[in-house]
Length: 123
Image (cartoon, rainbow, N blue to C red):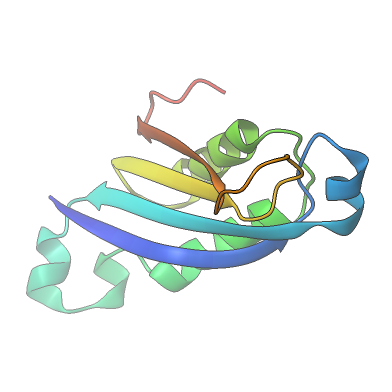
């Protein structure tokens, strides 16, 4: 078993409860941890025996850019759902950050963290 981590992927999406967020969009950042059996890839040194992170990046981009979500929780959950549907990983954890939020106050971002194992995600 091993862990593949993709850090600080940046996307532009139109997610949020308010009309301003849905109309104007904003920057979203994703960190992703994926656990899977790497033993075959360690021996073969072949891309066909591992998780191709370029494909993972394309999947996340598609989820974030092709639909509007009200909640970060729903968006992060759909990232997990799509990942388990399309990629052979045993466990995954998504950290999803929204950089600019319409809230009175000063902070860097709002973030949700969701994780699940294959076959245990109930969406």
